Amino acid sequence: MNGAAGPDRIARRIHVKGKVQGVWFRAWTVEQAAELGLDGWVRNREDGSVEAVAAGPADRVEELVARCRRGSPASRVDSVDVEDTPGVVAQGFTQKPTV
Image 1: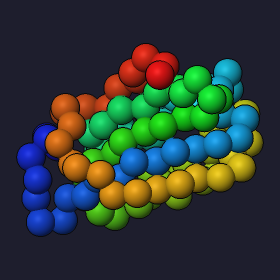
Image 2: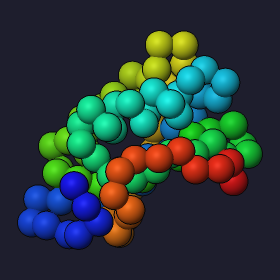
Image 3: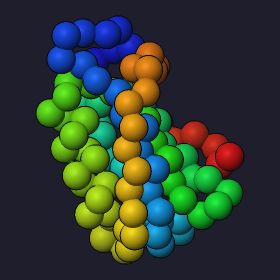
Image 4: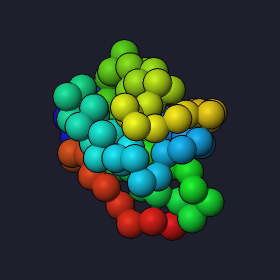
C-alpha cells in the first residue's frame, strides 16, 4: 500500500466510543490494520474515544470498520461513527499522540 489513490482505494475516518482507552484498543487496531495491509493511523482523544483513519482497498477498509465495531478483547464498543475522508496518508499504520 501507499498514500496514492487507486480505483478501489477508499479512506474512512472511524470514531469509536465506549470503553476503548486503557484496554489495548489502539495497539489492537494497529495489528488489525497491518494484517489487512492498510495505511493510516489511530489515536486516543481526550474525550475518552478512539479515532482512526484507514486507507486501502474498499473491502479491507470495511473489514477494519467491522472489526472496530466488535472491538478488542477487553474493550466495550458503544458506538462507531464512520465517514469518508481524503485518502492521503503515510504508508503503514501507526499510533499517533492523544488529541
